[in-house]
Figure 1 (cartoon, rainbow, N blue to C red):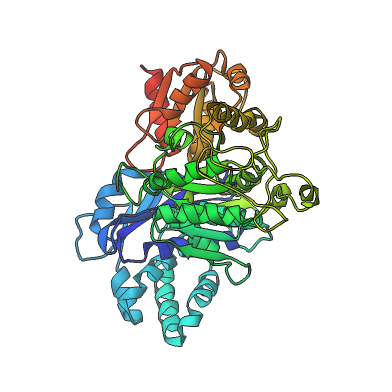
Figure 2 (cartoon, rainbow, N blue to C red):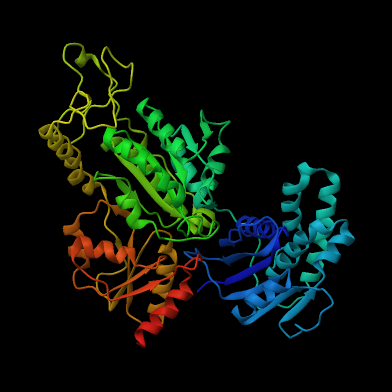
Length: 568
């Protein structure tokens, strides 16, 4: 068991809570440590209660934790909300306001704001806090000094001097505070990266040769576009803010029709608006990739919170029936690979691909091995040699054994390239003939048996166990950690985790799940994965552990619920 601590820094919006977390993350990463950080923030510019949780270890982390070893309370609300989450031997660092009502053996009162004013400005109180924490963790002031120089040097000598003085004053106080654990901050050689789900999704799209990102801003999906835009000067990208989500998806479909790989990013409410464009892509058999970064709804719901509530909607979105791919990655590394796979298979089968993410996965950051690679996702399925169609007609929707027809871009040969949202003949001409309709529906659905072969089955820890914690997407890491902890406690738990969601081979899935006691873990109120499994296999789940308060599923939450189930 490695050295493992969790720190929560909380205060009102505007206090620079995330800046403290970023400084800690960079310092720990430079030292070769592993981190997992989560931001919890309200949908407001000032006030409210925001906090940043960072878990630090000398071993790889798969999930966050809410067992607090250090609580940094910049305001009173943070102290009141989180003091009961303090682990044994944990400490509290409170902003000193002259109120001694919180004095105890575990609490230190530090005048963050006054120390910042003494250094030259109240705005640097977050730098004071970062200095205190890094000193407690065992970092040297040189570690902090290098980070501050990198962050503030471009802002001028005055701002840099202010933050260096603020950081030093906090560091000196931190050295006087006793804490039962520390880390080795001697710089180590490593090839790890700290990455968010948003950045991983952007990199996956760029690795797939995506060149067009039409979008309409909607949290939390906008983070993917922000990360993609950072590469706009290095790649030939077009990033277009449309007037709404309807325009964004139609732009993506239009660009793909012209041969440009495109991706649109949105959240559940925006995805609702995109469903007509999704149907257009399906009928016209034009590949397109959409990221649905889920958040609680319906309507505006909780704009800055997380959920896993769009699973069944995504599988069935838009009118009528048509093939599509749905993926639900569980980590930044998984996200990178899932987005690449979405592009590759969307192009190969000429169907929409949807990647289900959520606010937790989009915004949280963690240390990952730097083994992101580019593979076959660059393969093009567009016909480059069109000479064969000089003497025979080009049939855009030609009937084939696989259901996939030849796809050419406009002006690529001496023929017309027709695409339409109406039902059509093999030539692409509108038709209401019933026999043609049957033929075209069956043609599109021929793809499904081949699509299923592309999808991986859910992962299992072991095939024999008393019960299986079963989930999908961003809950992956918490499920794995909860399962391993339960096994250490002598409880015979295993996991089943879905990442490739739709379409799945129901016969293979039934074989895997047969005679297994399923405990479904997901972030919605109706156990959507459980319903999907029952629909596909006829197998029902035994229990469910559901969370729909807009907050992430932590390992401790799963363990507590399992213990309640076992005592039921």
